[in-house]
Length: 259
Ligand SMILES: O=C(O)c1ccccc1NCC(=O)[C@H](O)[C@H](O)COP(=O)(O)O
Image 1 (cartoon, protein in one colour):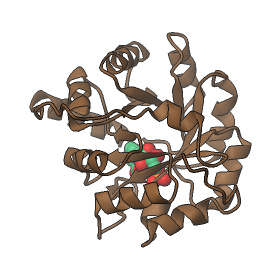
Image 2: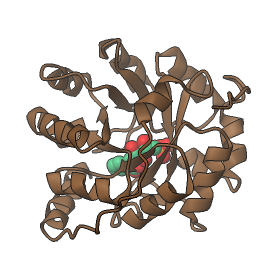
Image 3: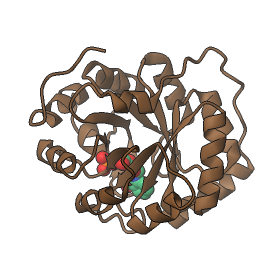
Image 4: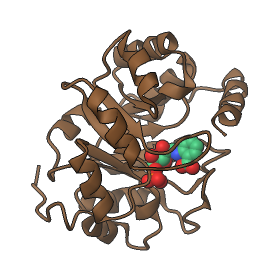
């Protein structure tokens, strides 16, 4: 599936049109938010309508309402899927969310080309995702540098230890995501976090991504060393996504620091 998505992206970037610059955007730092989370483990809460592995997740989909509820419930950052074909997302959703919340907003998409970085700046993203299994390490580093030069942070995601080691041979990303989902097979296991975390440099922020379905899963990945989690489906399937956040954190700690 990852290869199919990347083939689509390669076609899309050839016809991508940039929106006009949005001058009033006030950037918020993802790394700062995750280094000082409101609970004992940080939360990037995802706005996700559908996915290749699960199909339609939330038919009654109102991105701004969802993001506001996440913010109210003490999320540290918001992730917005902007891919249209496979996730039923849209770049406008990110712009709308950015205008409605104070939290850092991560653009969740398949970034393979510099033009998508300029697009991300213009739509109001604070950070972008770079997927280790989707890019040669040198290309990933070029895109990473370009993003930071343009004022965006990057969540550098890996699924395999080998991918991480190939990236670390070139540079050390500030924020490293361990995706528990294999994007080729969709097999999802929290053990991935356990296997990869020991190889993440101490100064990088570790985000465990995907497959976190309940409070027990959250505790598990925290035990494995995750400093933050990225959660989509399990929150999006609950009608009240704010209550879902509180439920997810019930075993970790109920106290939310006001920032
Ligand atoms: O979610 C998918 O099916 C998927 C398929 C192919 C590439 C990427 C995919 N998901 C992107 C993500 O990384 C997740 O949306 C994110 O980590 C949240 O995962 P979850 O909590 O399991 O919805």
